[in-house]
Length: 263
Ligand SMILES: [Zn+2]
Image 1 (tube, protein in one colour):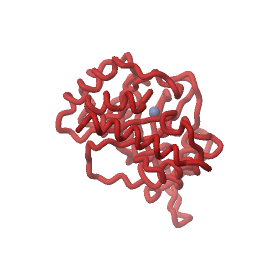
Image 2 (cartoon, rainbow, N blue to C red; image 1 turned 90 degrees about the horizontal axis):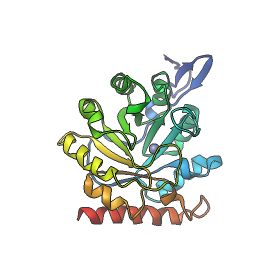
Image 3 (tube, rainbow, N blue to C red; image 1 turned 135 degrees about the vertical axis):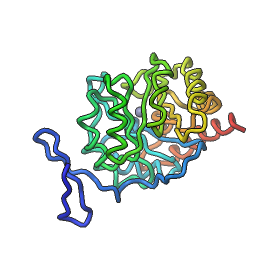
Image 4 (tube, rainbow, N blue to C red; image 1 turned 120 degrees about the vertical axis):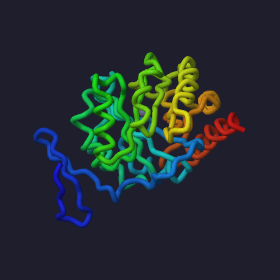
């Protein structure tokens, strides 16, 4: 990676093979402050947004009260679906005021970390199952200046992250098999969340839930110790950029259901 100071933004240029990819800058990063808290955060996944209109969709969900924007990157290899890569992350970054939470469902991961970090990702999450060297991957994510997340597929034991807890900022529990939006929540994962919450103790580590989150399932994972709730179809259903009010109603419904479980 080299620095190009030719414009005021001091952009990073990342070379991926013969592709010169112009990324964002640290200044374009979101407002994720260093302080940590376990309040419920709703992170809509743009997997359920209008792919032809990501910028306006990101602005709409933030205006409607979401906390983070969750970006699902799929490669058609680690998961059976393809979405988009770092260039899209870089393009939507200026449309997101808050946290851009990038979930990499790709293998290998390591060759792309710098590109996603340069795109302005606040969090970069990689899967335990994506390769034999997740420890090195997490080091590389933090080394690139992003917060590091580690994700677990539904069949993966909570203990897989036991020796990683001092190098992550978030553990993501997949509550569906990764690859597609709109799937049904896998209830066995609630127990995994409870285990992880106990393992994490006082460490400043978020627990994120990804898959099948709606006002019915949100209370289950919130009570078990999760604080970041990714929701795709449950946020975007019924609304659009020209009619964004349903986004807000959906976000509020999930948040209120989760907070009720904590009261
Ligand atoms: Zn995700």
